[in-house]
Length: 139
Image 1 (tube, rainbow, N blue to C red):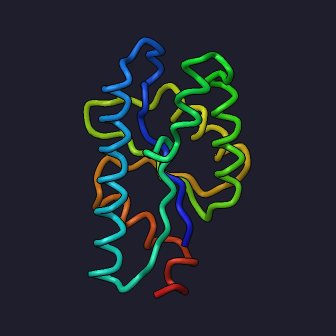
Image 2: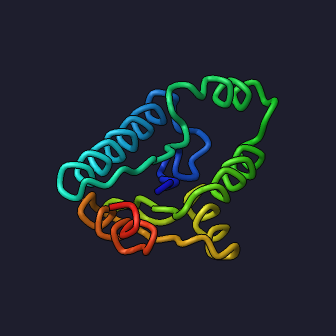
């Protein structure tokens, strides 16, 4: 099972500091790691979760900061990556809202009939992943 985790990076605020964006990306990597662990420990299910904005994406961060790429161009690439996944989980924690790049990615997935679900918690994300027929076959 291959999952794309859409998450807040700058939340539509282009003025957010790099430190805050890094914190958001780390939180998403932690969220994905807990999901992966729970699926394996409790269901013996392997899942690959792609988290955009990872530490290896220095290229993207630099290209945007040097105005060589726009956020919109990066989102187009992210949407292309989503096409290779079995599903999209959009992480919108309690108190947050679906906006910015997450909204773009959500709408793209819906328009292209990629299974897409909004999750607030790890438990919700695990249930959503388990609900797909591909997940049942992988167990």
